[in-house]
Amino acid sequence: MQILFYSPDNKPEPWLAALAQALPEAGVQVWQQGMTAADVQPADYLVAWQPPAAMLAGQANLKALFNLGAGVDAILQLGDALPPQVSLVRLDDAGMAVQMAEYVSYAILRHFRRFDAFEQQAQQQQWRFLKPNDKADFSVGILGLGVLGSRIAEAVQHFGFPLRGWSRSRKDLPGIQCFAGDAELDDFLRGTRILVCILPLTAETAQILSRSRLEMLPRGAYLINVARGAHLAESDLLALIKSGHLTGAMLDVCRTEPLPQQHPFWQEPRITLTPHIAAMTLREESVRQIAGKIRALERGEPIAGIVDRSKGY
Image 1: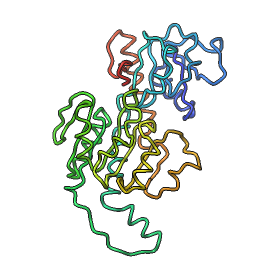
Image 2: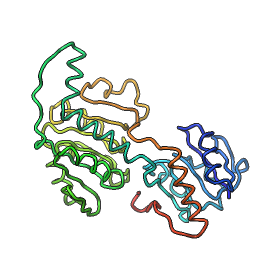
Image 3: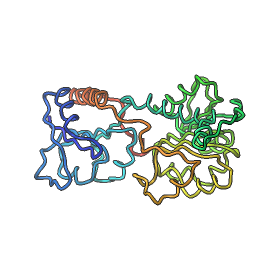
Image 4: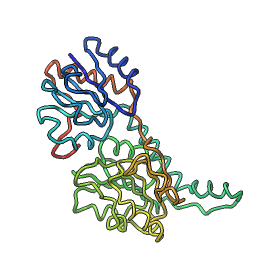
């Protein structure tokens, strides 16, 4: 069995050691930019994050590609470079869900409890009371109720916010007012004071956070985006913050990463930025999960997490 590994954001050595320990029967090779098909052993499995099309060249024996992250949009953009018979497998969780829940809970509480305003006052050496917000007026709406969105909802429920959720297909989650499909999206947005986007990026969800949709949120609403930068029309967000329709945003993702120094987001104090760190892939858990699924595939058994390419997730 041969595994080919690629992840431009990670040092390969710890991953190779973990894969070798979990799958001692496998050979593992690192793919690097500039390699040709002649430089690479024929692989049974790819373990990769944002692999280029060149990595797939000549891989006629490939059975599955394991994606080292929650979103598979970068791989789906490869199109025909990934043959249809090759299974694309996403990580079920690998420790990301609880991290995402922590991040979003912090972002919600930071805004609701006005900690962002107190931080600004402290920078100006001001000691001043600010009237607390009423939780009943701060409905939290989660846009996307998959594995990560459901875990976020579970965490937020503990704080007693009115909770809403929207998904493409109908969900029934306790304690959450659930909406589904295009027909119910507008109603979902109109009743949401803090909007959390955790959608997969597909052709249907790109630019979903545009002016026409964001204006449906009640005046004074707040945006938290932990999904993909391409979900958001950045100039529309800025315009709605400057007009006062939105009070601000906390963004972990942007269209261009790293965010260019001249980008206007840096100059808008009502936008809080973090460098795509809301949920990091945990190596040990990821390798355990990948190794277990590879062994199941080798035994001819079905596995969870296979992406439906027609849906994009």
